[in-house]
Image 1 (cartoon, rainbow, N blue to C red):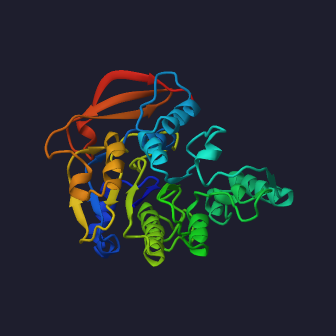
Image 2 (image 1 turned 30 degrees about the vertical axis):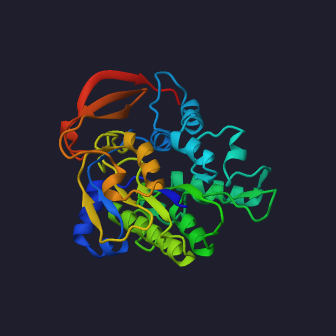
Length: 359
């Protein structure tokens, strides 16, 4: 029996990950047994549409609400339905889906119960956030404002052993260090999504909070690698690494350029990194430049569960292949196609088709 883990590390671009490997090849040793698919094409330029696609492999329809799109990808996911038939325990650890009430019985990481908030701590966090907003730029680094500041205030009123899942890197890494992997007699599927290299650049390579004035995108990728390595080490120490197929993937790539409003551009995000290891697979770190797209993931998951290794997981030949990508622009997605390398933004061609976006 084989387990399958899909680890979504947000906003890690394939070309930047490759540059880091060339600069510091010791990372190849940390990811031995894995194959790096350098020519992977994402589905969307934004997380809240890309993560559901990773789960279900279905495109959004024009005018479809984001919440309905997420639910549809969970309900009609080929891989989730297959896993349920095969009696897998399924855990979906992501906030990029608006789940339905029936999902609490489908997924093992969902529990019924209420939540409360520490009111005094909430006021403290709210004041800190206001101070951050109005403080001079050079003082913002001293605010200590983090995305987990408010989610950490939630207290579950049911089973005291449960705690909210937090995507923010320092809190995620802290939780990972404090808890061992639980081993079960049942086959396991886990999709785990954390913020990875997503801006702001707040972390050093050991996932310590250092603030934007000292942080860089490269350091955020290094912090991501630290989290991933620790998780892999825990799989090994628990004795389930060999029985586990693993897909490490980003929801989309990254473009450090900003528009006139000071926001990061949605262009040049089409090439996320992806590393794959089959169960009982052992070899040096490998590179594979075949033209992969997120459309291939549903079949790849099944192939990994069937025991196939890196050369067989994706039934994709070398050479030219037309691939599709939805880029977000205002209230629409523009549908682009390419027959070039996933990293080549200039090869993307506008089909002239747009999809109305409803958030």
